[in-house]
Length: 506
Image 1: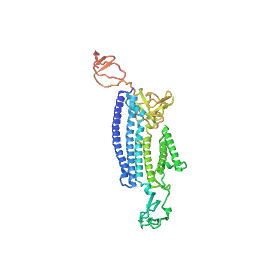
Image 2: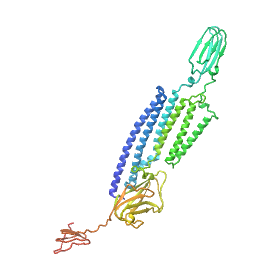
Image 3: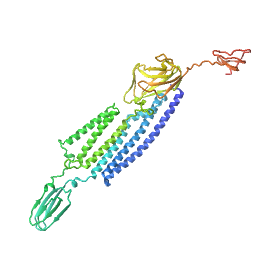
């Protein structure tokens, strides 16, 4: 069991950890509350863009600002989550190894079982998806209708008012560059359609009933070239590519979330592949739902392509900051942190005397696998640098007594006897000792201060003094005179005088 001083220090640290958790949780709650409100307002502004006369760069810019704000909000969210996570882990370790509490353990287990952290990430990705979809709808709704930009299918029925002879003329033409249309009625029934370089149409009634079409190849088409989902055929290459890309998308997403051993590099690589596939799907869908003429890419498809790229990049950053870990020490910038080993080590005391024992406890923080120690394998290494030792160093390796498998948040303790000799035969001396877990490159943050043994030597006193010297159980001898107390003396000496016995005055 830890001593009183270590218990008090652990309790103080636990209270500080709980205060940090509470403070950061309040900040996180306010961040999400007001952040989601601002996101909703930005999405509303994006949705009414179709009623505002803005250029395409401005429309895309508003979507970019919205997605950038969502990403920034998520980064702040992750910042507070990391602080809460670190404080929770430390509080849980103190509860398990020293304090014998269960508050953080119960809360952490409940949070992990329900997997609430995953849903928070998907909320932010959902906001990005909504922003992209709103941008696509704004771009499509702002585009001119295909019936006014690509073709005009009209039926002109002309009836003579003075001769009673009807003449029906159907004209299917493209009038994009038409500048003028003149119709002249001379009282006779005759229809004449002329297509010149200025694209002007003259219609004149003459005495004969006839129809003449000049250069009609440039004015008429059979019907509008407009593709939608109903026109996708089996042999359409783009439809086949869309189908294949969707299949690959779901396969990669399935394998990505199924794998339990993905490291940072694999996560980034799979996210990039995911980004490429999603972009291709968006572009292919945009190709089919937007008006086009003879498979030509128009401005709407380009804008949807840009929005898809922006949305996928936003989702990529969300995924990246969710899975990334801090692998470098804050102090050195080079040494790896202890947390990368998924272990936390606790020493229950910071000082002791020779021949006393120190308890060293390790906790498994890895949620996926057990922490294992092989029989007779190194559990930890205890070192001290001092010229009084042979070779100027004391180094003791404590081995595991049996095969050990520590489950998630399980603990294992080992005692270090400060009187043990090392392999070189060095006897421990008073000084500072460092404990390094096996396979680690740096020692723990705490060190042990060892002082001389608990057995105290008897004092050596010289000089002239009058005192009461304790003798045995409650019996004392009071002596007057000049005398000397040396090491090993049990009774007060008698010097030139009487020896008095009286009550114990100590």
